[in-house]
Image (cartoon, rainbow, N blue to C red; front, side, top):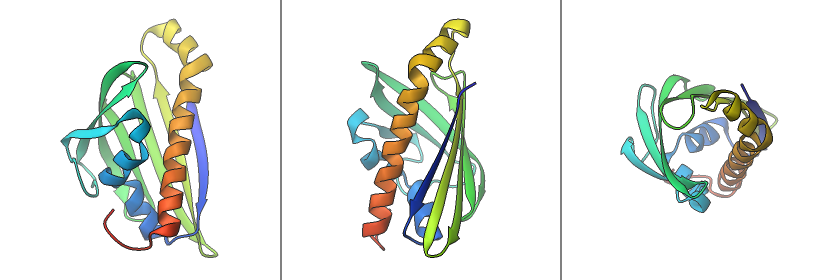
Length: 155
């Protein structure tokens, strides 16, 4: 099962970065390339523990849907979202935040499994893991840029 670990250092308060990371609106802005939209569940504002959001986006020439639920959250320190329904066999994404010397460290641990048995494992190894890592890196770059330039305002 592939695991993607990312660390992003952001010159902004931890609460600000935490809230931006769970902002439905900012997520949609950061994923303009795939035209990702929230279509069900929480579709705007800040997602909370126990809530779901269904994302719809174009990946690999097809419109796909993914429903995730926030399964755990401790304000400003971490939250976890997990797939409820979608194309993956499973998906688990942990977001962790710490603050020191004027910077927030945002750490992602993204675990997923493709369907289709051995074929899915091959696709993950040679293509899907890199694709997912690039999507997460772009999203984190967007959060970093926004957090470091927009200090207050609607998320």
